[in-house]
Image (cartoon, rainbow, N blue to C red; front, side, top):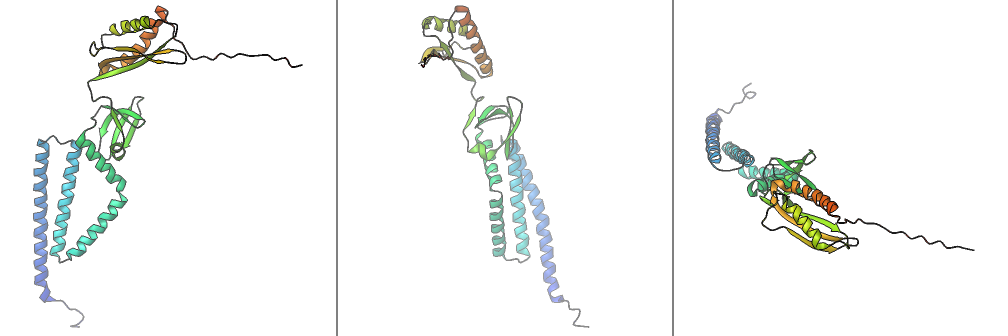
Length: 271
């Protein structure tokens, strides 16, 4: 019976010391983590860090602190540090491989937040997608298209794509192209266009509007029209120019040619 119940009473003091030390480290570690996070949160609030990056930094630091605390606890329990490092390294490599796309999106999100190529409500083009920025998260950016569709774009794609921001500058140039017939008076047509331009108060006087011959087309002489206006007025000015120049040409009798094909039919009498 004596051999059936064997307790190593000699090892109890050492186990008790380890347990007490482990509890102390855990308690003090949790307190230290809360203090560090509180100080970091206060520091970030005083800075101009983006709210999305603010949350990411807090969560990343919190996870790192708990990893350090866990490593210290394992060390107190006399677990081999080389084994810990090997396990963490293997786990990190496996996680990085499995989440490589997500990590690319996180990196892209951080780059967007830091470099700020666009802000909320900016009108941007990403590839063939055009829309206003509704929300910028760490993984995705949400756009609202001009026809009121919601599009989510992974930040990794944004970070590696050519991006056009239509809202960054205060002023924009409106480009239009108009065609007149070869028999029309170019000087007169240009003066008609300039009258339309000068009649729109939204168009800037400086830089001066440009009206010039751009090309001798197959069926028309093409005129380039370039004017400057406020970014907010861009589309309204463009649509007004397209409409008002056509109306002015009709009023002044200036021909606007269109593509046409002349078909000649020859009859051959076969005897």
